[in-house]
Image 1 (cartoon, rainbow, N blue to C red):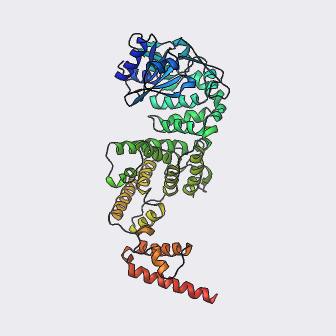
Image 2 (image 1 turned 45 degrees about the vertical axis):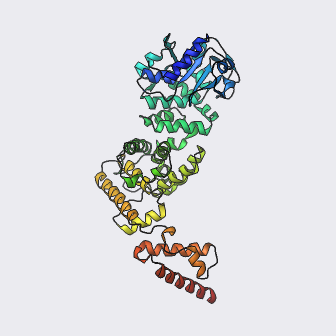
Image 3 (image 1 turned 90 degrees about the horizontal axis):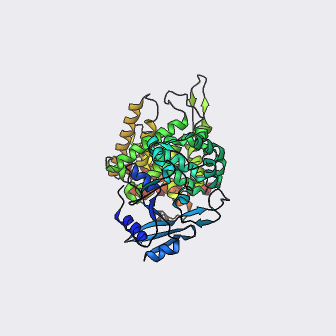
Length: 477
């Protein structure tokens, strides 16, 4: 194993002061698998105050649980004392933490065998619970009794599903049975922590592992809507999967869209919102949750006609409402909620070849979500049956190009694009208030129909006519 120089420095300093020190957990697992670790955690026989004495720059990030962040240059490394957890009373956190001089005692409290290995250059890999063998087998298996591990920390169940998705592993049968047994305890985990694990799963190589969370009963407690999606069929020539399968395929196709963006293969017009301040991680999160939930409304909108064909009228609007409830449950930020629900609300609005219709769609949906909308529609279509697929994809591409043309030509699609403002309406005699907004929206409809009418003199004339008519009607009444 090759470990970074700063990690070696920390291990050497611990050894110089007669303490044991090991890289531990995910960084060891990833290194064995040829993956680049996201971070390097270190475990040591030194107690927190002893760690602080050895290293000049430290931060007490979790000192009550034995964790001190050691700063080397501008980089921080979590160094945690060997510990034994006390009794868990809330299925999440130990009531107390006891420090131990024994590495084995520290490793056997960990969640899965593949995360319970340690390494330093002198001892090599310390693997007391078969983690190496489980990596070879592609197996997620608890350390010791899985019911006990999950009873200690209920989040471990969802972490197991997430690791299976990220690594492409299978969950060992006894561990899987334990998830079924302990599934209801996931209610003790905060929405924020569940959101993090679910997001990582959607970004993993096998997001379909979410079905294991559904099959074991976990979803029933944090995402019951997905359980309903997995039980909603789509007897329709446009579809070949039930709603749950279709949505997971849409997530996988959206992953390809995200990767194309990361590799710089999308057109500039599709990238305009990404350049507006969102991080890459947030962009991916928005797109993947939109893909997951775009058809959630179908679970309550399904009807079957006389020929036995299913239809889902209004599922886009209903789905947007349901998605808002779900995203708020997971404590997502307002930007994510607004964009995801907007995408779902308009994902069925396909290009019909009319420039006027496209301007109207842009006006209603908003320029903030339009480029995302084409990405969601593409992922959606690629997850349907092959029935008319190429025609649908061609219409999406035509719509994307027409959107780019309209944007490039600066054709008016919003009130801010009008050649007149609210102040002009005040000059015509209107008082500030809702009536001005109503009049500006009327003028916007006019120029959406015919952009050539977006001229100040013409719009002022139209506004004057409207005000005059409304005044006369008011006087007669």
